[in-house]
Length: 397
Image 1 (cartoon, rainbow, N blue to C red):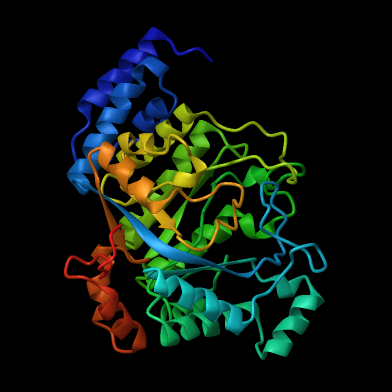
Image 2 (tube, rainbow, N blue to C red):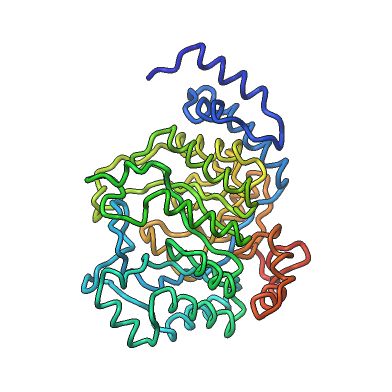
């Protein structure tokens, strides 16, 4: 619907009422996320000011290796090219030797994060995965993931960050013993997207209530947690705001959301949503800006490779982190979108007035609590951490 002059005036009034460090309301967020193009510069200016109040002068990234432990998955999301069925071309579960080879190669290149991505409990659907796990000596994919996190932690200087899908409270505790942080994308609070023909059709693990429960259970255990929303998959503007508000509510209760990712759908020829339209740059900028204004004191991230070649414009929308960027491995979730060269990332960030700094998979504000705990994880984390809580490294960004 066209935006009326009255609506534009209300948007301008609410932008003027914003106070640094204070979260905006749902009503204002709904106005901002649908604002007129002519009002976008004012929205971005407010979001950038909020970012600078939160973390002035810097933008961070995590130098990582991407470890796709298994691409077998029991969910069939309409936008995914990562997942495979057994027997599909490219279907693979990594061996411990393969995991360690990638981790050691990344260590030589100054990486500090081992990002574990994998399908959600594929053994519940595929007997072939059960047989693979039996051959490897593990009861489940999560048991195998736990062992591989421990292997990387013990044998290298890298810190694991697992993204294994839905987790019970018990498994959150087990993985927290071998990784300083973990993640699960909420994606959306709109359960209607599980309907036939929509983005989460035949993807039972994408039920929002289940994902919110995992994020909450992590909060109850004080586990630094990464989450976020996926936009452009059939949700409304209201859904985007409500997804951000659900994340904000959990963070206000538990204080454990270390990072909120705003990720945009990108079409690919082999997916069920191949003919789905992609969002405009303006929609992405509005969503990042609203995320910043709803959560002015939370780290906001968007993958630069999904917004290339104009990814630096996201800094103007209040971004303060680029997420994990690898000098070694591709983005296995979006393999057609290569990471920007780290030197380009530095130059583009500096052009927008930000110094690029390398962080660990866990953010500085959560490090001290983890280092205070006994065990190998705390020892490795302390060795990897500089005095400011960022990555201890002599390598230029």
